[in-house]
Length: 305
Length: 263
Image (cartoon, rainbow over all chains, first blue to last red; front, side, top):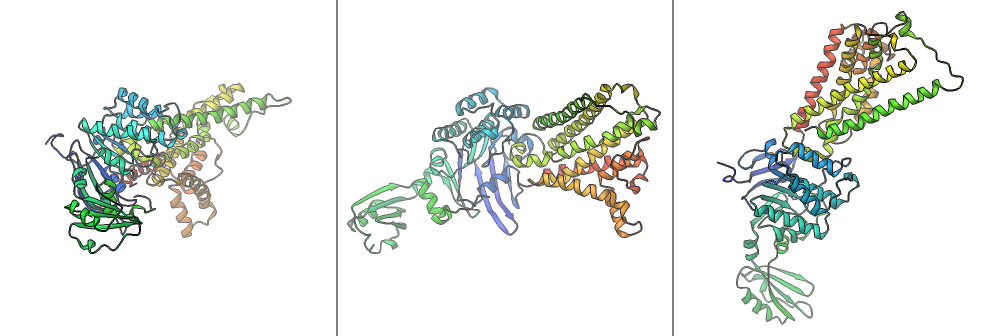
């Protein structure tokens, strides 16, 4: 099988334990060529652990991981670009020296591409990295990762610390890379970024894969009927047990019903409760995320592993 | 492949050379100070009919590459702060680590020559270079001195390559432990289990070999001021083989522990 036929990133039954704690449990995820997969999850859900094992920084306790059908080898990095969550740049080196390091180690290094990216992100190559802002750190890491035109990209919080203009530039780069056939796996706490770029989403919670699907299919799976009341929300008259409704969320004077089917019928029924306004909304990725992980987990202050 | 380490070495060697340059300036100022007189003599020249054997100079100068080696001995540990950067290059980890160790060894050799150049410059300033004679012990002492430095370097790599941080602490501790251990073999009464234990531990103590190089260099005094009789009893060839073997084995352990480290 050649590179175009194999699955670019295949994670099969992957488990990683740190002592008694299971960071990731039985994760299976195949990411197709040209796909952009957004890996979401609250802090500590196992995203970074998955990336670490995928890149060989840690060893899986069980299960397997393959890049283009084979286990990771040093040669894999010739076509795999990575942006870590935490800056791994050498603080005492300049940006220019980082690029020189890439030039010397990658056969696939493209100096023209690197120059374009430096220009795009306005990275000051003469400055020592320790003197750069957090955003410029991230920008330099992105320049390094994309300067070899990799066909697989693993990006852990790639837009972290960047201003909105550069965040957009990163998303454009990701979309452009995928349009040219690259496979991208990226994590982000900013769901809007994932919604804009990803065609597929995988959500992890406590190390388990709880949602996996294309963005369109996930968003089309439910509708939200939202009602705003003038006064307190009245008695729901058995609405909670309506089989068309998967769950109801009350927030002050706002009622949201998550509906599997017949959203218009549910809207008519809620209208009988005399709200000020009723509307039928499409599910956003944020709704899907919060539905999946729950508010408490999403607000977890613990760092990711 | 070893670009980053070469940049680091360039910086370290510049500092190292700067120290010698500063010492030379101090030396020049002191000999040109009003009323200054220079007394020429000492154990080395007295013992050799006024000549200065190169072997004795190299034995004394062995401290310099050794100090430099302890600075470089944590190079793999330094990489661990941002190991994601270097481990995502298309180069095998063991090849990369071996490359680091080889260029570090090269820099230790350069450090030895810089120290020698400094001494020769001092002698030249005093018009004494003509007294320096290349004796039979020069190559031997150079090889042993370099081996001791490499042994310490390897031990530090093996102790620090597999974790993040704490390298400075390990280097400092290694100096304290090795300095204390070396003379203990002479202080503790022979025949006791503690003496036996200390003597055995001293086989992996570079400082113990340092005393051996000095007392075995032709006509040289014991520069370290420490004597470990058990090591001095060993033949030169065995000491030479031991320091290089320990250095190589420790470096191999460092390479594989670095390769297998999880971050």
